Image (tube, rainbow, N blue to C red; front, side):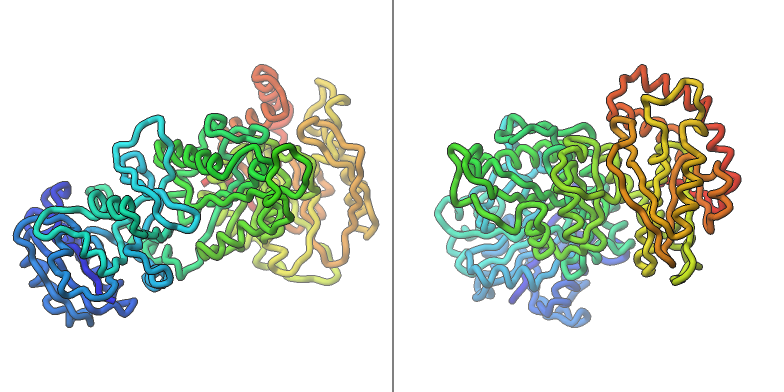
Length: 632
């Protein structure tokens, strides 16, 4: 398959960089943009290349010659007057008798071209356009496709404020059938995106879109050039190729991205939660994919149509896009197994593999995007999301928005709990890898001991991240083949009804019972623990039986862990976690707001803790073997 590269751009927005050379010859990381394109073509054995030059065309021709230095065959054709992208291609129609690729010469990309070619050849359309969501759809020409990827219509900028459109943008990489020459005017200016493709669709010709999250960016501004250069130097350009497994953050929709509304069925009902666009933007600038997986039984129940869901997701895309954020994919399940609803749609009343907690949507994302589940997360507000993550082998995060885990449908525990999506994404992207490395260092000398129990004690101020680091420690131990049990000392708190104002932290925790129960556990005997309910601030009546087997590790975490002499003496590893007070205070206020306290009540409690808890706990830092900062 031949490759046609449009290399005649002036690059007027690039200032002095393109004063004496065409835009595709601007150097990025010590190579012209055009050289990156020739090298990726060569990598996929696409060695017959036509360069369409214009402004300062001799610079391109002198540099690349016939292509032998790059192991390709290059032919150059220079236009004397600007003919636009389509007009320029029309000029070389005599050399294009088979399907061919079109690159824009100001684009840096690393895409699995074999996959694009395979997609095109299977469908045999007049054109296949590589598309992707971007962070500025409001000033981009947008493409609308059906469920099969067939292009339905084009939406040229500017876009009306009251219209919601899915975020899918022409990425300036095409595979074209030679039949397209019949629709290209000869000798006059015409543009593929604005003139040719929209007319083809209107005339009933078939165009397909190949949606990929791989790296493809045009060098439209100096700022973009600097960004791309950083990505090349860091290796990000190559890591995002589809051949490499990608990390993803799977997101539930209702209660995580938008306010929870029971059976949301219209775009008007969708309203994003605070800071959601910033959280999604943070994912976009990382190497994680943002993938929504949502159950939408409103379709099966006849409360909303597929078109309604499409419009809801169009609004979601549009609102995020106005805030320079985007979702890489949205998957939804329309099914619901229970029958008997007025107006229900029988074809969707089935037991399927896509309705969470089944993993069908996640499996589809893995197939589409080559996702590494072991390195990925799911964030949800309900137990069904957590169980889905467990079933798929993902790390799970519960947020305290939406249902906040109080749906009561499944009995399962998340790996981590955070206040909202923003806090969750900051943890994943800014902190998680560093904390894992710290945990690995701490546990580097620990190995399986079939007789002896390893005891790890983790302490620190309230809301500093003790349980989070405990889970990371547990995960590392599991990977070492060391089974472990986790004890949260909050389960030995005095219930809120029994607390007195005079009680300091050492009275709020039942020190004697902690010592007695853990000593019993270490003797190989069973103990029964009543779980502390963080929302009611009382101890639940339901008891959990715990027994520690020989060779298992025991992880104990709690505010007062290092204040109890018995625990310090038995611990093999003593850890103190801390976080800057501004962040801890915000977490403290968010946490007690979630519990239902007023702002005044929280302020009063915070001041009280400054007096009767914080000094005591901070002093115990001196007993720690390791001090772990939990922020970036």
